[in-house]
Image (cartoon, rainbow, N blue to C red; front, side, top):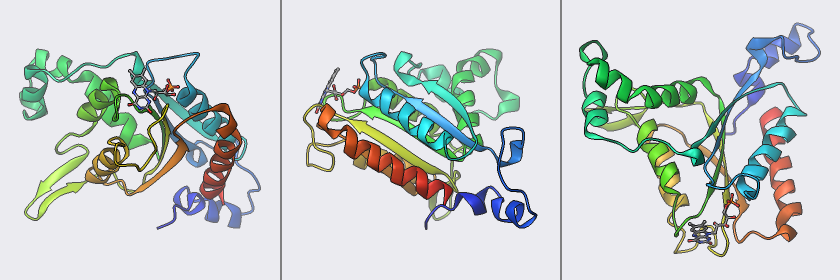
Length: 225
Ligand SMILES: Cc1cc2nc3c(=O)[nH]c(=O)nc-3n(C[C@H](O)[C@H](O)[C@H](O)COP(=O)(O)O)c2cc1C
């Protein structure tokens, strides 16, 4: 199903009421975007530059409120205390267990609040950076982002639209040695997100910038038209 941002943000009724244009003070009509980067690099990172290009392009077309997370700066890996805390009802959690999952709670909150996610992820050793795997381990939580039912697990995050910028040096997206994108699609689907589009910045070289810009233009247009 095509994501229709006007319907999603109630813009149809806004326009019908005669309001011409969104502005940042109309909070209820601001597109909430979660901007997640996972390259270990900063200034030299192509994926970080391209996710920013995506957000900048979208911001020129509509009002955007962006919440940023630089996974590449490092996230906690799961520990015994954290897993124990995941499976303990909140009212029974010890102070240590609560503190252990504070980062995960923040991630889950941001995940629920945003309508659009823009993710930058480079291919490292044919799959994801370790910090990005840590991010997914903090995001996928029973009763928070998915739940078990009699007929199997069901994702709880629906109505999200996700755009993933994938960079690589030589690995081709969709090739038999791309272990990143099938895994990521499956993880997102597991938590209920089916609307996933990939910005192809694989086998990156600057000659691809024009094609990348074109992909971004089409994707951001699909969000606002
Ligand atoms: C630790 C490491 C492992 C990498 N492994 C791969 C790989 O398996 N396949 C590939 O095509 N490129 C690989 N690369 C190259 C990166 O995917 C490429 O430089 C990409 O642009 C990195 O994203 P960034 O520019 O956002 O930092 C690797 C780079 C690093 C630092």
